Every structure is written in structure tokens, then in C-alpha cells.
Image (tube, rainbow, N blue to C red):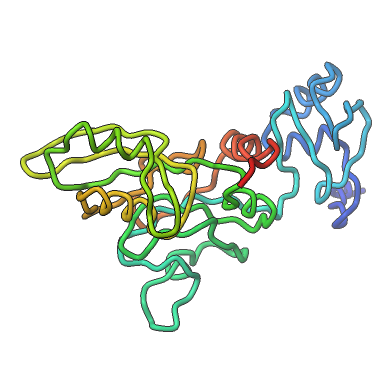
Length: 256
């Protein structure tokens, strides 16, 4: 007599926790059972027990304090936006847009924040609306890191001024960090980070102090780094990166 294959769970049907953790990439079924038995797994804020069944679409699961996404429908991507591409899925003017580079992504996703058309680098894409909102909301203060090409040589006073804060037409702005990476002839490469996302904020800050940016590349959003991802390519965020993003926005919002 043929052996029946295991039945796939229906959407919303509770699944054994150890099976869910294994499917999420935490480890083998056996090692996940050990994590549960050791009290290192929580579900919706409560310490889990062996035999617990949870809904993968609604459960909030943590292992050793790190969030584990158990809903297989969730998509988290890093995209290296090339220069000249607008940060919209489609463009009415016919310019290159994000959808032109996402042919292999079957799920509808949206971009987390923006990069202007002349800027390049890391853009996060997801269908997790709550996480996207937290990552972009200024009250959570998620830092972004950029490499900026500006006229050189660059006096040390420029960095001190930008870190201390300057006043733009829409209010004060300050960099969290400023580091000269390299200086070649009449050009300087500077790495900066800041935790706000006003339109063209980095370009406007450098222009205000007399050093306009000729090239701008975002290299990190919070704990997620661009790395070796080539322009126009996407990659899935790994479990550690996703957990780190949730940790980044887990704190109470700061006053805005």
C-alpha cells in the first residue's frame, strides 16, 4: 500500500513550533526542540513549551531575544539601485524604475524610503508594511550610511561643522559621523551617517558648507550593509539581518 505524503497545512492553521523554527532556518528540528526545552524561545511574549502549535502568519517569535520571521509570505530584499533609476515601482515619464529590476520577484514589494535618481546604493524592499513604516519613521532614528564624493582637499573644520549641526531652510540638521576615506587630487571621498531622511538631506548639507556632492552612494541602512552587491542586483536578507532590523526598531520612538 502506498504511503500518503504529509498533508500541507492550510493557511492560518497552527503548526508545531519546532517545525516552524526549522523551516525559518533556525536549525534542525532536533536543535529547535532543544531551544524550546531550554526556555530560549518565546511566542507573543510568553516562554514557549514543547508541543506548542502556533499560527505562522500571526505569531511573534523570538529566539534568544532575536525576532524570527515565521510567515513564509514575508519578503525582505536588499537592492543596489543604480544611478539614474527612480525610487518608484513604475514611472509615468518612462524613466528606469525599480520594477525594471525585479523580474524575478513574484511578490509585490515596496521600497523602504527613497534614493533620488542621481544617487546610488542600498534600498530595502519588503512586503512587511509595519517594519517598513518603522524603518522610515524619523522617530525611530534608524541610521543610514553614505559615501560622498566632494571637492577636495577637505578642511577638518567642515566635518566638525556638519557634526555640530547646521541650519537648512527646513530646520537644523547634523551628521552622526563624518570620516574622510580618501583624497585624490581635487576630490575627497567621505563616509557619513545620519539618522534622518529628509529629501536630499546629505546633498543639501554639503552644499550649505560649500562642498557640493558629485556622487552619493548609500552603503548601509541600520545594520544592513550593501557589501559586494552589484548595481541592479537584489539579494534576500539573511535571518540575522532581518532580526537586527527588528531589534533596531523595537525601542520606543524618540520624540520628534
